[in-house]
Length: 355
Image 1 (cartoon, rainbow, N blue to C red):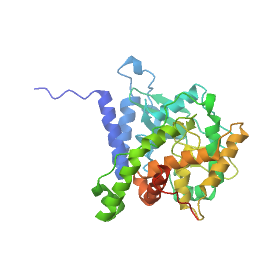
Image 2 (cartoon, rainbow, N blue to C red; image 1 turned 180 degrees about the vertical axis):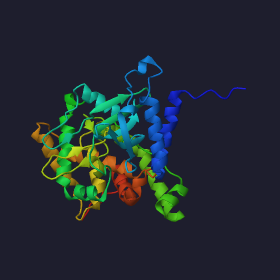
Image 3 (tube, one colour; image 1 turned 30 degrees about the vertical axis):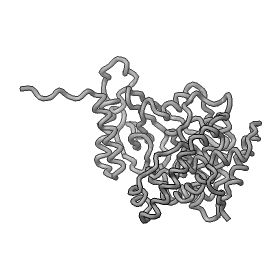
Image 4 (cartoon, rainbow, N blue to C red; image 1 turned 120 degrees about the vertical axis):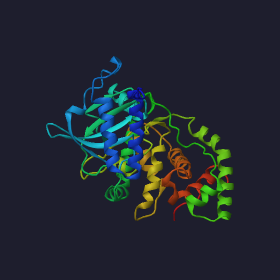
């Protein structure tokens, strides 16, 4: 009696990738490490089963040490890997057909400017492409990539530097210079959550949950027309996740922009929505109009005219959409503001500004 035939390699890779992501989410670093090694062995550490996968070299044999990184969220896994020569690299596993690989494919075609007056990128030193998953190998960025208190403090204490880096990146890839990538799915309408989810997520009573659900129904019913108006104009390449963990600010150097897992085409100003969110963690009040003015100045220096009101509209529309979505864990502390702003944008209520 024979046992079951082994699962195809591609299915085993997919299962290990899902296992790695789940282990990372629950903080089980030992299981996370095992899944990482399994993926590298299956996808990149042996001769390919299919000649079409011949570009996937035997990476496993070239690496001598792996340290999984649990503080990152993008892709299926991230780790620090050291080769036989003692060189350590930051290795990230992403879907081959996903946004990040498409971004670096555009870079390889010469469509991405790796530096500007206010920003720079660190392109991968190697890419290993498989049918389902691909590895991106970057220079080591230090012991603690990802979001840390120190990075958040640098971010909120250098908002003008952050905004100029964002604007310069966007302006470098606007109009005819924009690469052929997908249009962002941001600033979209959402399914109205159940009252039970509202109670559980926001820790409110049932009466408040009914009021919130009623407000959300009114907003979502009108939101599609708002997004259509926003995306009806010219677009530029946007990062779409410019939080503190994705921009490295160092003294006397241009900021380094990291992690392009959400890169897409969007209206100018859309990337400021994460700045509006994280700037609230700083010491002073947030002035969205000032941030929009700084952003527009950078575009103007490149000879591209953008209206500050249009920049602010794009930033606030994306902020309102993203942070009223209760399926995201980062919404809770700014949900009330996002909902109030959403109502203002669809004409149900006058906008509220910081004093």
